[in-house]
Image 1 (spheres, rainbow, N blue to C red):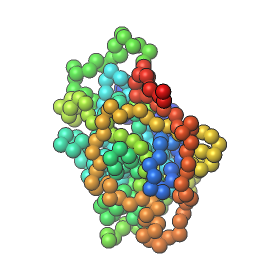
Image 2: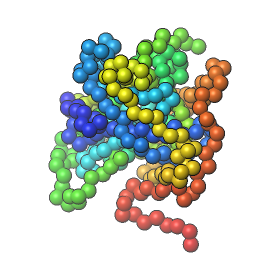
Image 3: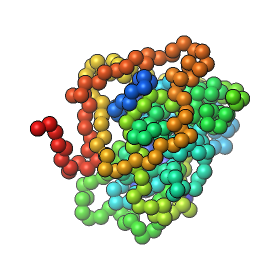
Length: 329
């Protein structure tokens, strides 16, 4: 199996793949599709085994790591990989596949691609809920029915994020970086709910964001499904985090409205040529946090008024840094 390590608040799986969890703006859930929000720094990552006497027994069974989040805070997954040797990666939230919406299955699926390939997939900001867009990952407590897991399965027992990474089969790609392009590293930058589990959280669906899930250009036979590494990422609220570690969690980010008013940039990734995996019929039916609030009769818990983003605040990011963008003539 591929080794899993925590380094500088990033999880490295195998020799060439790593993922970190970026703090970010919670985008407005107003029906509009927004560009990519910024990364506001990595969430701190802690190993379960280092706090074994203070974490729930189920954590010791699952192993892995944990990160702190505030209720209704958003995150995105930032991937890093070597351009000469890609990996296949499956991601689940509460053991629900974030690409297909199916319940956790370790086997890669070819007929309905349920994984990403890194490179070139640079990040994942939410569940694959629409053609050309995702619904943002937003932290919510277990036991209330808001999470993707709760809506798809009718129960909330796992929470967190599950990640498994597969190496390619031997001989398809070089093990070491080729001599050419030595300076280049590709940045794959009515169910009965369970009772609340202390301060444990899962991921629910937030606002809509423009983002594609790239089809596997290599084919499923490329991946060695016997050679993998995996990690269980538990999510805890601020109170439980303090109880376990004795530390203070990071401060909450500013709102999307305030961020925009200060003139800070949003981002548009120019990747249309890569294509897009079809939207999940299961995940497209998952209700957002705002919709769940309304269904449960709760008053609005956040400001979801529309945010007008000036065109000059949306920075274009190229998949190929050598490509040329056309403009207005």
